Image (cartoon, rainbow, N blue to C red; front, side, top):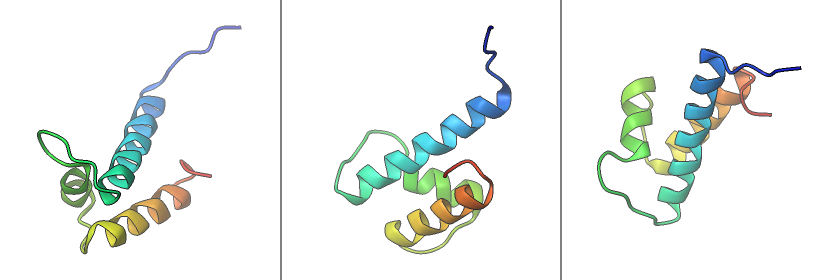
Length: 68
């Protein structure tokens, strides 16, 4: 049986990757280009510091059924 990857799967993987990236940014990791923090804030209109945005984003992913 073949498993096909859908657009929804790709979108969910992107959101989980952003969440993990923000987790690393909270711990002090930096990157070149836009931060996951700024991407999440812009796309979902969250406010607050990195930890508050992480908590809001995690709650949203749980409510959407993307995160267990």
